[in-house]
Length: 172
Image 1 (cartoon, rainbow, N blue to C red):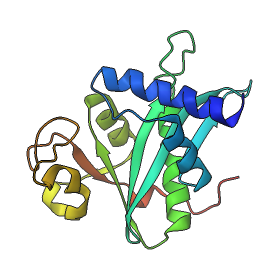
Image 2: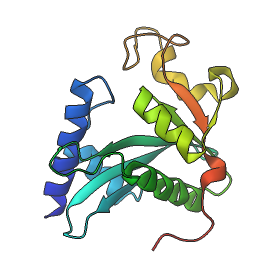
Image 3: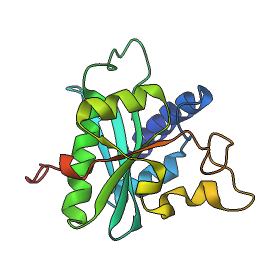
Image 4: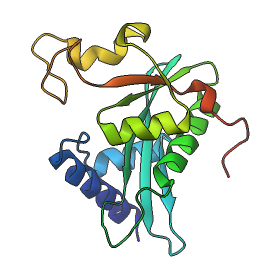
């Protein structure tokens, strides 16, 4: 599978999940850009097919958001609830820590499935006021509504500190 096909496949997964209200949709070009900049992580199965994706965003050099996690939604692929989402998140957290070792790494969960995964990973739940307000820019701007069509502080996203989950060793 070529780079464009992989990015388009992952974008299709995000669009399917967005239709269910579980995440923001992405375009293939966004995913290609995140990968080219070293901010995206793809997990592949033994046949070289993508099974999961996660990326990090740099809000400030000392504040990183890890998210946009998606696992192949095809029931025939049977990849969900097997630790794949956790693995791609941990690899992305490690990559973000390697690139920005002094940064606080935050995850914002948008739905119950994401929140359960982050809690199981060991994420430390924070209140919205405990994290840098820059994370709420999309919700706080006048006339700008967050993904859930609610303005800050009513956005249902829950922040988690993930900084302590970064592994010290390099990703291979």
